[in-house]
Image 1 (cartoon, rainbow, N blue to C red):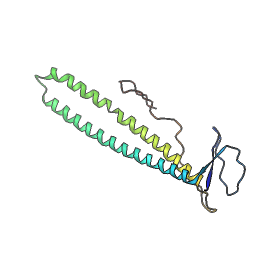
Image 2: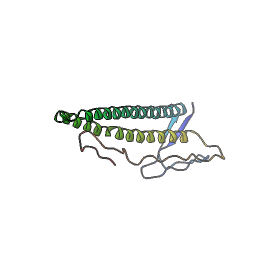
Image 3: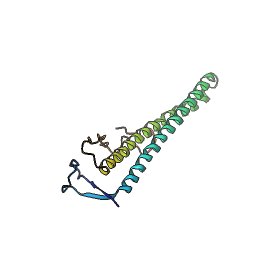
Image 4: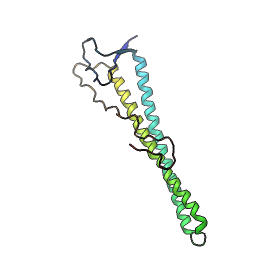
Amino acid sequence: MSKIVIPTPLPGLSRPAMSSQTLPSPSPSVSLPVHLVAGLQDALLMAMTDLQRLEGLLDHATANLLERFGTANDTLGRLQGEHAAALAPVRQALHQAVTELQFHDMATQLIGHTGQVLQSCAWRLAEAAMEPEEDEQPMALDAMPERPSPVTQSEMDAGSVELF
């Protein structure tokens, strides 16, 4: 059974360059079977695909909601006049519902951020798992996102959203 040795950099230190020679590594390393690394990379890529599908579903649902809210608002506009006082709370409820659709924007940011993390992990696993050919250039990897999350919300009440 072949195993892969994955150097694990210490915080604040850059990862040592991989070479065709086996040199002692100053940082700790983990030895993993190739099939485990390949399976983990596949799982990460499947999770990314699922997140992209979720983002598409959210986009579709949000577009439908906005269209329906617009239709309801237009209908209420035609019913104004003698029913204006009775329609005011309905218009206010519609306005608040549209405001709460900020959830879509926050969810999309979180999905994109998580996808970047998963993709970075998958490509780093591939880089560590595959020994480069002699004349092969190293993979250009996207940087891992620096922040843990682009959005820090815990509820959907007015004023509870903190972006960036």
